[in-house]
Length: 229
Image (cartoon, rainbow, N blue to C red):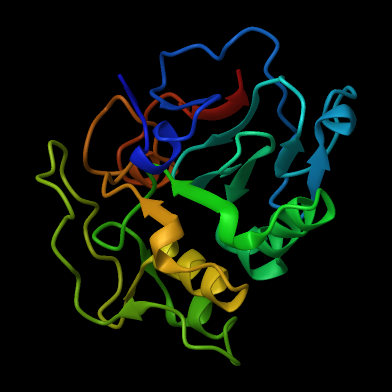
């Protein structure tokens, strides 16, 4: 099972996919050794063995990808279909500026930000992403999108939701945080499409780190890729 985004499907010369755990990447796809950094590499650098980074940018006809298991898979393309990027958006990388760095890659290639289309694929949703007060202390100078009441799933959930762990827990919306960061970088909300699929409670076809912490299981992850064709 795989998913696509309408705003990327509508771009001529672009192919992409948010894959399930059992699906293979296109041949020759490049991806990084992800370490929750803010580094977005050019595809040539990503091709190096064990290159560390959490995003890949290219203007070549080489598929690029990221691996996730609750974090945001962010796929970006220029409307002319000439440049693409795949970004791994965990909270650490987002906080450190990985989206800014990805957008800067397009700036350097001469792409106007208004010509970008951005798709955020399946990821953990606030229905399942409980964080602690200690986590909240890491965000002293901003107003992240979390709430004190657990929200309902964005889609009917086929799997149980993790039990609440703290009486004073917060429920964090990682995709909404990415949206705030993009807005601060002059990206209009209409340029961004966000999947409503929760990796934790929607389907076993998607791997979830959070789900495994409550119900031990084999480690599973999924790729998301984009390419010029």
